[in-house]
Amino acid sequence: MAILAAAVSAGGSVLGGIAAGNAASYQAQVAQNNAQIAKQNATYALQAGQAKQEQAGLKAAEEGGMVKTALAANNVDVNTGSAKDVESGTREKGQLDQETIANNAELQAYGYQTQATGFEAQAGLDQATAAEAPIGAAIGATGSMLSGASAIGFKGLNWTGAAAPAANGAIGSDYVASGGVGI
Image: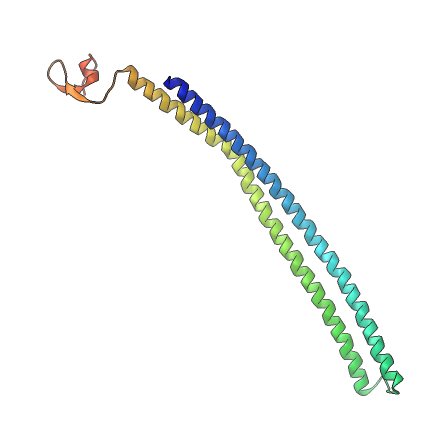
């Protein structure tokens, strides 16, 4: 009965290790997929930032044109003095808006790239777990079999572990009492 229990325990360890390895492989693939998605999101963030930056540039040019038109309509010389400064300030504001949009897009892309790196690291860890799970299971199975074998071995020797006087009067074990070698 002990051999059967040890075999079932060992088999369970092996099957558990295989299942753990398969689960870790699955998790590694999920992490790889998430890393790929994060990389795509980084690319999309940069592309969206470029599109917004172009829109901001067009809007700034439109605002600059409206300012120049309004000044000229009021009979102000647009090429000198404060009128020129107003136009210059409008252009600088537009440029700052464009640079802010580009910076925000780059920060968002960096966040996604960092996330992708984390997912790739997790995938590597999961792949290592998948590779090591069967080995750990085999070691556990070997331990179960050795434990079962040792239990069977001691029963075969009629070992109870209790100290009792031997037939010759010496203190020993039941094994000695049944004709074995004394301790």
